[in-house]
Every structure is written in C-alpha cells, then in structure tokens.
Image (cartoon, rainbow, N blue to C red; front, side, top):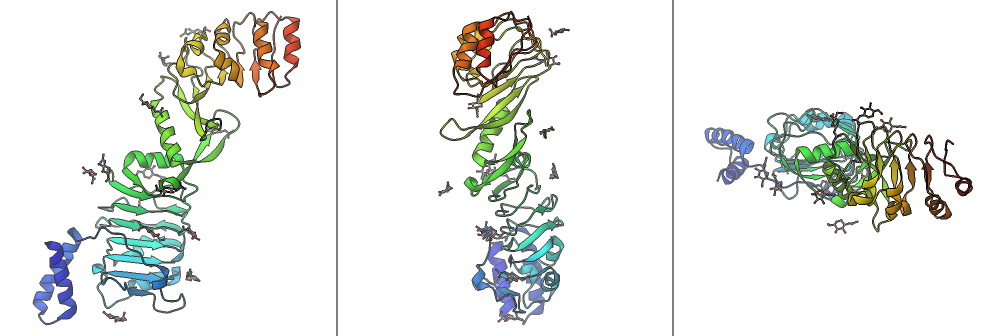
Length: 406
Ligand SMILES: *[C@@H]1O[C@H](CO)[C@@H](O)[C@H](O)[C@H]1NC(C)=O
Ligand SMILES: *[C@@H]1O[C@H](CO)[C@@H](O)[C@H](O)[C@H]1NC(C)=O
Ligand SMILES: *[C@@H]1O[C@H](CO)[C@@H](O)[C@H](O)[C@H]1NC(C)=O
Ligand SMILES: *[C@@H]1O[C@H](CO)[C@@H](O)[C@H](O)[C@H]1NC(C)=O
Ligand SMILES: *[C@@H]1O[C@H](CO)[C@@H](O)[C@H](O)[C@H]1NC(C)=O
Ligand SMILES: *[C@@H]1O[C@H](CO)[C@@H](O)[C@H](O)[C@H]1NC(C)=O
Ligand SMILES: *[C@@H]1O[C@H](CO)[C@@H](O)[C@H](O)[C@H]1NC(C)=O
Ligand SMILES: *[C@@H]1O[C@H](CO)[C@@H](O)[C@H](O)[C@H]1NC(C)=O
Ligand SMILES: *[C@@H]1O[C@H](CO)[C@@H](O)[C@H](O)[C@H]1NC(C)=O
Ligand SMILES: *[C@@H]1O[C@H](CO)[C@@H](O)[C@H](O)[C@H]1NC(C)=O
Ligand SMILES: *[C@@H]1O[C@H](CO)[C@@H](O)[C@H](O)[C@H]1NC(C)=O
Ligand SMILES: *[C@@H]1O[C@H](CO)[C@@H](O)[C@H](O)[C@H]1NC(C)=O
C-alpha cells in the first residue's frame, strides 16, 4: 500500500505543481516511505548501447525504461565528483536505481554518492583500482554491483552498515578479500572470476554470512599447499573443492593434530585435494585415529609411539602413502608388511631414531625391485643388524636413503 502511494505522489509531482502544500506533505511522505519500504529488489544495469559516446558532455540520463533509474557513462576521476553532485531535473534521492558504467578512477570514493540513495547501485565495466569509504548507516541497498572493474582492493568496512543487502556482485575483478557486511545476512554473492581471492577470506565469509553463490563453478580461490615441506605453493581451487576441503578440516577432530591441504591427487578421475596430518611432538603413545578421509601423509615424529599396528588395522589409514615417524620407540615394522596397501603404494617412510632391530629382506626387495615409483625410505639411527643382501638391494634405488648402524 505504501508502495503505490509513493508512486502516486511521484507522478503527481511531475504532472501538477499546483498545490504546494499537498506537494510538501506528499514529498515528506514519499521520502520517508522510500527510506523504509519501497526499495525495489531488482538489480539495475544498462547495456553499453544506452550510453552516449565517451566524448559527449552529457554523462547521465534517465533510463529509457524507468523514470526512477539513471545511468551515467564514461566518467573519469576528474569528472565524477562534479557530475554526480550537479543538479538535475529529477530529485536524486528519489532515483532508486543508479548505474555508473565505465568509470575510470584509481580510487572510487563512496562519498561521491552522498546525494544519492539508490536501492540498486551498479558501478561496472570500468577501471578502478580500489573502492574506498563507507556507505552511511542510512543506506538501504538490496543490490550492489561492482562487476568488471579490475578492482584490487575493496575497503573492508565499506558495506558494514548497508541494511537489506541481498545481492552483491563483485565478479570479474582482482580482489583478494571480500569486504565485511552486516552479520547474519542472507546474501546472494557473485565473486566469480577473482583469481587472487584468498582461501581463508572466502571461508571466513562463508562462515559469517548465509551465502548463495552465483556462478559457483567459475568461483575459485588460492590455497596454500604443502606447507609442511619446502614446497609451499599456492594453487587455484574451485569452490566445490574449497567446500569439500573445509569439511575435511572440520571433520579433523584429532586432539593435538593439525590437518592441512597437502597436494592434489591426480590418480582419481577428478583431481582431489589430499590432507597432511601433523601430530609431531605431542607426547602421543599411539597412532592417532581416525584420520580424516583423503589423508595421504602423516607426521608423528617426536612422540612416544611404540607400534604401527593401526596402519594395518585402522581403515582410516587406507589412503596413507607417506609416514614420517622419526624419534619414537617403534620396535618393528612387521605390521606394515601385513598391510599390503601401504607397502604397495607408499612413497615415503621415515623411521629414523627408533628401536628397529631388523628389517626383513623381503620387505626391502619388495620395495626396490619395483622401479615404477619414486620412493623414499629412511631407517637411519636404528640399531639395525645389517646384512649384505640388504645392502645390495639398497643400491638398486638411488633415491633410497637407508642408513644403518651395526
Ligand atoms: C552486474 O553488472 C554486470 C555487467 O557488468 C552484469 O552482467 C551482471 O548481471 C550484473 N549483476 C547483477 C546481479 O545484476
Ligand atoms: C571508457 O571511458 C574512457 C574515458 O573515460 C574512454 O576512453 C573509453 O573508450 C571508454 N570505454 C568504453 C568501452 O567505452
Ligand atoms: C529533463 O527531463 C525531461 C523529461 O523529463 C527530458 O526530456 C530533458 O532532457 C531533461 N533535461 C535534462 C537537462 O536532463
Ligand atoms: C571482465 O573484465 C575485463 C576487464 O577488466 C573485461 O575486458 C571482460 O570483458 C570482463 N568479462 C566479462 C565476462 O564481463
Ligand atoms: C574485515 O573485517 C572483519 C570484521 O569486521 C575482520 O574479521 C576481517 O579480518 C577483516 N578483513 C580484512 C581483510 O581486514
Ligand atoms: C535468512 O533467511 C531465513 C529463511 O528465509 C530467515 O528465516 C532469516 O530471517 C533470514 N535472515 C535475515 C537476516 O534476513
Ligand atoms: C539462507 O538463505 C537462503 C536463501 O535466502 C534461505 O532459504 C535459508 O533458509 C537461509 N538459511 C539460514 C540458516 O538462514
Ligand atoms: C556452470 O554451471 C551452470 C549452471 O549450473 C552450467 O549451465 C554451466 O554449464 C557450468 N559451466 C561449467 C564450465 O561447468
Ligand atoms: C610455508 O608456509 C607456511 C605457512 O604460511 C610458513 O609458515 C612457512 O614458513 C612457509 N615455508 C616456506 C619455505 O616458505
Ligand atoms: C565429515 O564427516 C561426516 C560425518 O562423519 C561425513 O558424513 C562426511 O562425509 C565427512 N566429510 C568428508 C568431506 O569427508
Ligand atoms: C594433547 O596434548 C595435551 C598437552 O600436551 C595432553 O595433555 C593430552 O593428553 C594430549 N591428547 C592426546 C589425545 O594425546
Ligand atoms: C615419552 O618419552 C620420554 C622419554 O623418551 C619421557 O620422558 C616422557 O615421559 C614420555 N611421555 C609419555 C607421555 O609417555
């Protein structure tokens, strides 16, 4: 009801300027109505064809399809402040939808919009390095669109007070961070085609707000892999993988252990992120269990572990291919021999500084007779009883590092 009343008053003002008293009353009513309930929810933007040529002095015009929408085109930093603050033959605060197309400015300042109160604001298809400043506490904007400007930075506090934000389009920019918003909002977010988006920031955003992603399959972020080795590298990870990885991490409830993305597993049909579980130096006396799904690497060095039985007995160890267990009290590797999966597929096994006494011959020859795999084995600093056959086998692989003390 308030909505139609507003529209009535709007037409009335345009067509009849007779009764000033009534006009004033209606104006006050319409402004307060606008501020509360009449914000349209649609996002507004115009195609390039609506714009005048970039050298035309007339930059802004009413939309050809709506008299509450304005589009301004080809504004540079020098012009924009003047153009947006000039007087027009419409009332700016009554313009509900504003599209600034092809703005060229190093810094886009939110304060440029001070005289405007658009419900839908689109600033698109331009060249902007950063967006600075904060929408005022009175801002009610169901739709904000900053798509395709090559934006590098968006003031984290910009959108903090925007009430009623429903749709936010930041697609096709170069953002590493999504700005923060009012807590608890339901948001439709398009953050696709931002190649520098950081994993931590994306996850924080997903935790803080209830987000429905648009163009989810074109949404990626950068994730740091292999942090536990010298191989640190960031990789672009799809939203689907991000959600999967986040759940894997959430499922990792092992006390005293950290679970991190490790590397891609290309063996499965679709590349999958695998995990490294690190429980080193935590006074553990037994192997941690259960390992999160997709764990291929486990570091349990510097603990008081005596037995590797779990690798054979615990199904969650089924994907394990790298075990780092230096500085423990492990006495034998027989359980590993029964666990054919690990022995058949491991790429690294490090058991330095343990209490191993013998290493069965067939174990070593099994490993090094196969030359299909890069394998790392280090049994150094154990009181191994060496035998000559073993020594011969070991020469077969230049990658193997097997040190033994007589
Ligand atoms: C934002 O603007 C772009 C034009 O650059 C348009 O393609 C997109 O649909 C707009 N987003 C929304 C939510 O309207
Ligand atoms: C954008 O505006 C600039 C000047 O402000 C102009 O040089 C450029 O051609 C415009 N781009 C398009 C696609 O119109
Ligand atoms: C003022 O508005 C009328 C229609 O409402 C339009 O035809 C005219 O071009 C406008 N003038 C300016 C300077 O924008
Ligand atoms: C993305 O932005 C670039 C400029 O930053 C533009 O050339 C390209 O057309 C945009 N892509 C889409 C799909 O809008
Ligand atoms: C943005 O602000 C929120 C809280 O308002 C904070 O938690 C977050 O770390 C900030 N992000 C950046 C990139 O500064
Ligand atoms: C989010 O959506 C749910 C379900 O539609 C609704 O109950 C809740 O109030 C909404 N939250 C906000 C902040 O609008
Ligand atoms: C999240 O938002 C969607 C769409 O607005 C809504 O259907 C859903 O109920 C919301 N969930 C919560 C927990 O608010
Ligand atoms: C992305 O998703 C949309 C709709 O879900 C689908 O139509 C489109 O084919 C997908 N694109 C790719 C590259 O998977
Ligand atoms: C790898 O990344 C981790 C986590 O950011 C960091 O602590 C470590 O120093 C990095 N290592 C190298 C060699 O850059
Ligand atoms: C996380 O744990 C739940 C409950 O155990 C399970 O249903 C889900 O598949 C697990 N998620 C992943 C990604 O392994
Ligand atoms: C985790 O570490 C704390 C402090 O070192 C220790 O008290 C606790 O027993 C450990 N938990 C497990 C499951 O080993
Ligand atoms: C672990 O072993 C060290 C000696 O190697 C000992 O001092 C420590 O008390 C042991 N801790 C546990 C929890 O068994």
